[in-house]
Amino acid sequence: MTTHRASCRCGQLSAVASGDPVRVSVCHCRNCQKRTGSAFAVQARWPGNRVALSGTSRSFEKVGGSGNSAIFHFCPECGSDVYFVNGGPSVHPAVADSIAIPLGAFDDPTFATPQFSVWESRKHEWLEICGPGIHHD
Image (cartoon, rainbow, N blue to C red; front, side):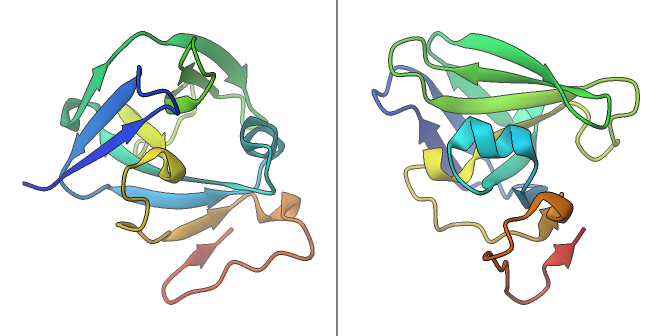
């Protein structure tokens, strides 16, 4: 089975995901914009039992516009986000018990292509997400 390694900038916190992700999405919500310092974020998700985590993390919980929360885990040394988990009363079953990892944290960030572009109501007007098969929300 193929593995994909992600880590923080200093290498102290890492995640190794096995197999293909179950979802790869671009998110334009304000939280992702602030989290990345960019106009959007891209992350890949796996079932939690297919991700091995190592190192020490600090966490930050944020409740989004949906009423669900996300717990972001970042390196206490360099501050890089390495993974997050979603929860809450109305979390979609597709993301329950999953771990999302920012695409840019992977040693090879080119292994996956987004399938979804979400929170497009918050998308910057100069930005276009294109490609075959991308679902727009």
